[in-house]
Length: 238
Length: 238
Image (cartoon, rainbow over all chains, first blue to last red; front, side, top):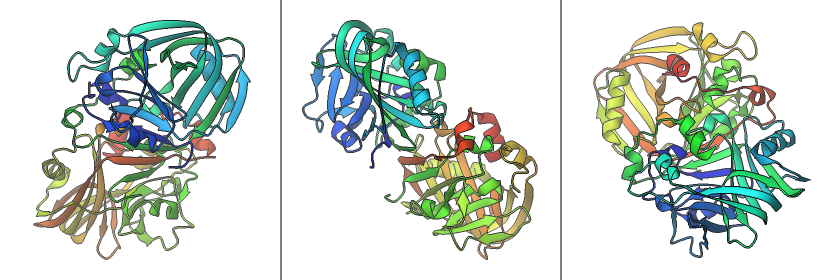
């Protein structure tokens, strides 16, 4: 796969329906990208893929580097072989700030995807981490009802994320979706809110090609109804 | 691209919003598949791709073989490099009949794609053909309000089509979507209803990989809101 194309394994509606017992080895996902987001089997923790390295950010606050991507499975992940086409420095206040920034940088991307990365010092980063399913097929809304939240202050680190166009809602999350990991790789999670400490380095790329691989020989996936639950996806992932 | 993977250019919601002034050369689409459906610039006629040959089925009833796919543009097409994994013979009555048949052949495909082809004699085939936009950005509902319908009886020919899972509605058409062309390549269109004359040959394949290429440098596409209009898509394409 060329640079700046989206590769995705499974769909977000499958997580909503609790389809997370199986998946694909993370090594298969890394063949398609070095930058991205996802989760792990049974939705235990948040995944961030940064420079081709995969980290599992757990609800107890710990971060595990996935040393063997062949032996670890993901039920949902989105990655790209990231090569930023635009680089800038800016002070960003919250998700509204990054939304305005990306829209300004990419006026032709209303119906395209955008990959983004921000490196620098953050005044605050508020994250959540999903602790995992209590039983097979437990849906993401219930899993996230038990999420742990952490707030980091004055932390150096990296935000990795994507903007997806509205019409992919249900397949992925429409709008902006970011994960954070600290420079020391000890803290991180799914971003609820953040604010930079002055300017940070921002790299981004517009993407017009989307590759979706669906789970096969997966009875949970086959049985799921996968109805669009746009409001509930926004509530847990927006 | 390997066999039995879906390649799609643009999304059906773009046609709903009347995005059809530009597109990609059909030759680019044929690099990804030899079997499929689509339309032409300004929604003039119905496209069928059969054994790598492309035909434009027009509202006046004529069928044009696209001799130069490099010089002809499509604003929306779905194809696969079709290699049927299942072959059978059956009598099929209507879209309900093919729906039951495919569900029986592929019990594990509830949330996957299916490509299908039927060859034989049809007692009746009722088709529509879209005549094209009267102005740029005229939406598909208005275009199809002027559609021409034809009924063929005792005609030998081929049905080409796809089943798409529910969750792709808006990106493609959820459910079954078929086009027909006669063996003499003189008649055809988008199928509204059909019935076989006894058994026909049926080939089909389940597909779990979906590749989407979005229009680039296309102001119409960038400006379109592409809101999901599920009921209206069902009305004109279902």
